[in-house]
Structures are given as C-alpha cells and as structure tokens.
Length: 89
Image 1 (spheres, rainbow, N blue to C red):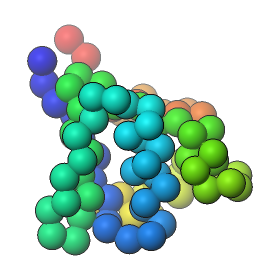
Image 2 (tube, rainbow, N blue to C red; image 1 turned 45 degrees about the vertical axis):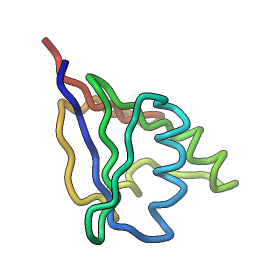
Image 3 (tube, rainbow, N blue to C red; image 1 turned 60 degrees about the vertical axis):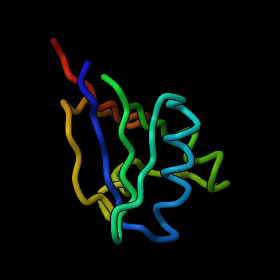
Image 4 (cartoon, rainbow, N blue to C red; image 1 turned 45 degrees about the horizontal axis):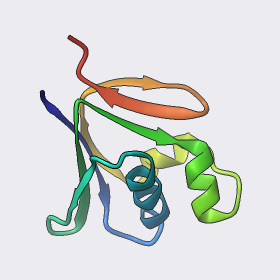
C-alpha cells in the first residue's frame, strides 16, 4: 500500500476544498507543513466537484484547484466532476 497526496497553499480559498476532500476520503490524513495543507491517503484520494459545491454553496469548476495547488503525488484521473489520485498496479 502506497500513499497518494495533494498539497495546497494554506489560505481561505483552499479551506472548503480540503474539507470536501476529508469528507469524501475518511482515511485521509491532513498535516500542516509551513504555509501548506497536505492531504495524504492510502492508495486513492478522490476530489468531487459536488462536495466542494456543498461546502461553498456555489458552482465550482475543478480547474480552480490548480490556483492553490502546490504539489501532488499519484496517477491523475480527472474529468469535470472529479479528480482521483491513485497508484495503479
């Protein structure tokens, strides 16, 4: 089992995204390195547009993730509704 991760700038724009990630990925672990918020998860992590919209109360384009994205690790599978990081075996 290998972890995937995604890290964002620690700011107010990232907060609802991180809350949505944690809501959809119960095995996710959030850490706060200086100036960042990093979310690790074993094997797979999924970010759903609909969950972010529930957090923000407004429409959300997943491409907005890239504004505050610092780094990520894992294979990316992305469409208009979700972004999934995983390690394919």
